[in-house]
Image 1 (spheres, rainbow, N blue to C red):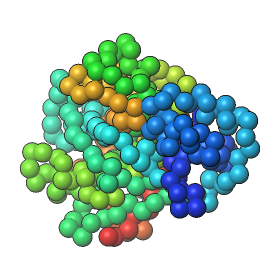
Image 2 (tube, helix red, strand yellow):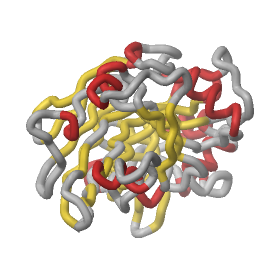
Image 3 (cartoon, rainbow, N blue to C red):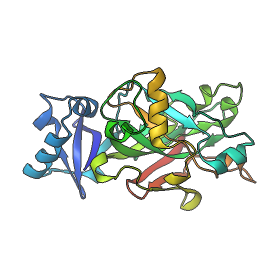
Length: 282
């Protein structure tokens, strides 16, 4: 099942994507769950699937204004340096434990919305990634149990303002400029993607492929990420883990390639779909 967050007549809601159509689940399940994060937290994904079978969709996906898949996550934890080629192109070394940083929800936009290049820098880089949305929360989740704690998966563009990222040894500033990261188009629920299924991730800019990797190339697997992160902080339903980008980022190319106004960035994951954003200046 594919689930989205979106605006319907100016009101935030959520729904199920059925081909080119969408069923607004807000009027059906809103008394139980006001948003997608709450739906996940209350364990109502089965009810959502049943509603999608029993009610005809009335909206067209292409006509909707989407929101980031989880508009209000409590945490967005990002994993850096998690593919060997990316580690090598940055000149760094593989770390024994996952390298982590945080993003804020204000730094995200939805599928179909503009990624915004700030006036402080022209070095706005793409990073294609796979996002994991937590279902059942917990502390000290074991790697063996981790798959059962996943609600679903989405595509992510971890847009990075490179010069601000490397101003210091901490990456927070460059990773959190307003509306620089893309999250969407939808969440594919975990029952549609087998545990440890190999997924192919591709990043394209203006139709040109710049990144390609498969999830079996991750240095720190998704279960290891969940186990490590949940050791020091409880994971909660709707939390997002952004699992790392492969090699081929624009900052390390010769010549360098940065996103500029009018560009179209696409993050394509074969088991999920395509996240597409145009770039504009703030």
